[in-house]
Length: 153
Image (cartoon, rainbow, N blue to C red; front, side, top):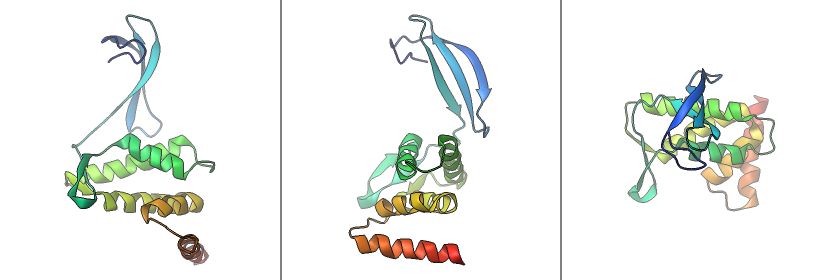
């Protein structure tokens, strides 16, 4: 593993343990050249996923991009990063076990919406504003109204 500080090729694993959800292995490493310590995560990847974007563009699935997107939606909400990691792990697991190597971005967005709906209504509306491309304040009002109606049922 390349050192993020000095770019040396070799590091030594000092400690390994599973993450709380058991979806990854957390490893503490030490660079053999500069002695710096850093953490890496090892995850099972069942298949390479490709995201089908608009206009028939394709790009590799990026777990970190999904985490960043969810973190923005959840900013200043009572949701810890471990919960976001769990949500992303669940979405990634669903995508990898679906049997499809190419996944439409709309499907990923729908899975995120489903996950956020049960997690936090404000984060749900924030994510929806980008996902559904809200352009006016009334778009927020209508969507927020439909969310609050669902909550009353």
